[in-house]
Length: 311
Image (cartoon, one colour):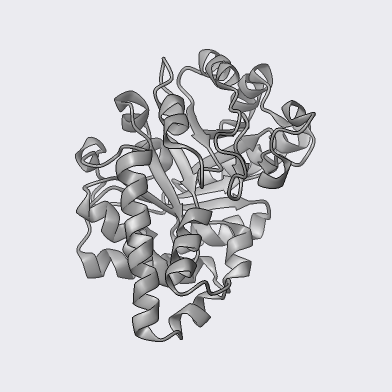
C-alpha cells in the first residue's frame, strides 16, 4: 500500500530524500515552520536556491500554534502550487508520541513521521517504534525514531549529560529490531537556543554509531544556534555523517524579532496581524532559511540530486 495519492507533487520520504545527502557531503534542512504563513518563505528559499527541503511540525507545535496535520499539509500544498515548486520536498511530522497524531498525519498525506519514544525505557521504545514502523511502512511512509535524550539549553555542559547520550551498541540493536528508516541521535545538541558559544559535541560517539550502522540515515536535532562549523563536521564524518538537520527556534525568533519583538502567537493570530508587519516577519524567515541552506547544511544547488517520484 502507499499514500502517494495523498501526497504533494514531488514529495519524497526521508529514505528517498536523504541518501544523496549522506553520500554527497551535505545535509537537508528540516525546517519547523510552525506557522502556516511561514511555510511559503521556507519553500521559496528552497526554490530560489535549488535545494531539497524538509518542512515539518511536531505534535507539541501543532498544539502550540492551533493547527491540525491537515491544516499544515494544506499550507504546504498551497505554497507548492503558488510557487510552482518542483524541488524535492519531504513533509515530515517531527517529535510525536501519540499514535492518533501520527496516524492523522499519515492520513493527511505526510510522507514521513517521527515516533519519539525516547523518554521510555529501551524495550518500550523499541516496541512503540516497531508498531509505528509497521503501520507507516504499510502506507509508504518513512519513520524517524530517537534513541537517547536531548537536553534543553539551560542544562548544557552539566554533570551527567553523557547518561542521556545515545549508546552506539544500543543504537545497532534498536535499528535492527525496529526497522526504522532514520535515527535521531543524542551527542550533545539541545533543543532551544544555546547559551554557550560552541556546545560540546561528542563526535567520537557519532563516529562509533556510524561504524556500527554504516547504512542508517542519521539525524541531528537542536540545530538552532549551533555553530556552522560544528554542523559541517557532523555532516562530513568519514563514512557519511548526519544527513538531516532540524531547525526550528531560529526561524520563529527571526519572525518575531522582525515584527518588533512580538511574543509567540497562534498561527491564526499571525494571519490576523497587519499585512505589512507580517510581511516584514516573513521576509526575515526567508532570509534565515536561505542562510541555513547556504551556510549551515550546504544544500544549495542540490535539488537535482534526488530522484523525484511521479507527481
